Length: 85
Image 1 (cartoon, rainbow, N blue to C red):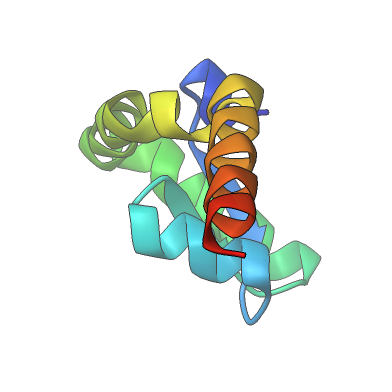
Image 2 (tube, one colour):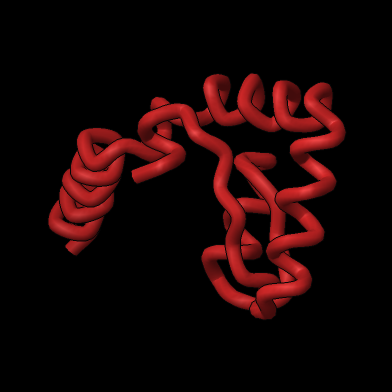
């Protein structure tokens, strides 16, 4: 939802969501701990340029990560399966 609305995401490192966020540049992975999250939020507060860069990147990729885009991908995948059988 955040990506679809153009907002950067903090995702737990070592998870599928974390890997996705990292691979498309839509935010950052962070350890699942309060100190790690607080540290990253402090870093982003103090480095506005990094936050702006993340937000700009999310704006570039967000249209491919909306519910509409996902539904279109599912329809295309199902169409390929039906056509291939």
